[in-house]
Image 1 (cartoon, rainbow, N blue to C red):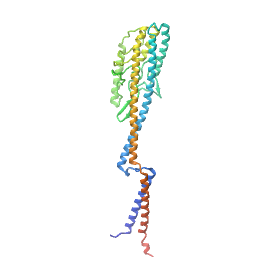
Image 2: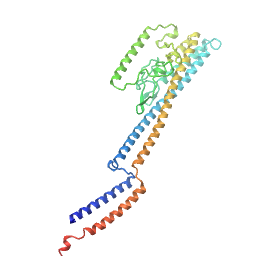
Image 3: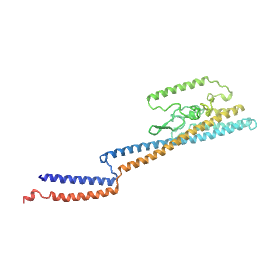
Image 4: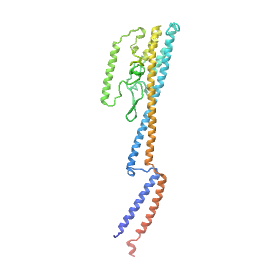
Length: 360
């Protein structure tokens, strides 16, 4: 086979190009400490690395969601703790003024002032904000949940955040459940009456159910007959008949405190004695709500632990696939450098003779 000068030149050019390309790739690996710098370096490993990074980004966002939910839940738990303390104080006052042996008309009038302060404090707790959002307003976080009369202007829906793929957790408890006793199940668990709408159709159904619920509440309020005297002046003083521990209903904390205050101002011993039972129900109601918040905090903490471990595992997986072995890279660079020098020396000898050498 005849070897032409052009064939020799192409062979030399091809070898030099390959050696310089290998040297450039190795130098790039040494500079970035990455074995894979573009998908063509290793298509299969690149796909696995991209998958691991995608999962890592998703888990990182889930962790941010959980931190946001934890701050909301922990602040709610703190508020419910304070609410429990003031309700216990209200019960102590009611016990001390429930009979003539420990109270009289003057002492009940003085104690009524403290009960009024407890009532105002409970309203303030119901209207607490974390940042710019009310924590007991349901999904209406920009609307003040309660007015001074104890009327509720929020809704009964939960704000749910995604903590994992296809996993959601409610980060709040609507004030209607905590303070008004709505949505308490017979098992004592505070739960939402409706699921959070996830599409247009479920949103329409939710709005329709909300309208029906409001109409039903208005009908019940209009048909309800008050049976007591001064302590039942206000419409919101109506109490649910079922205990939150044994039944499916709850109590209105605000009306319970207001009834107790009115009974003390009117020197109504029977009214004060009746308030003891409802105060027990109110305390149980808040404790149940607080236990629900605590269970959610425990759940998000466990989820965060697993997510943080998943983030570390994804980093390890990506590192094993794409990180370069520094010792191997340096060794390959030295070997390729020697090969390149040898190629240059032999190529110079191979293409050194030319036609000009024979035209002297």
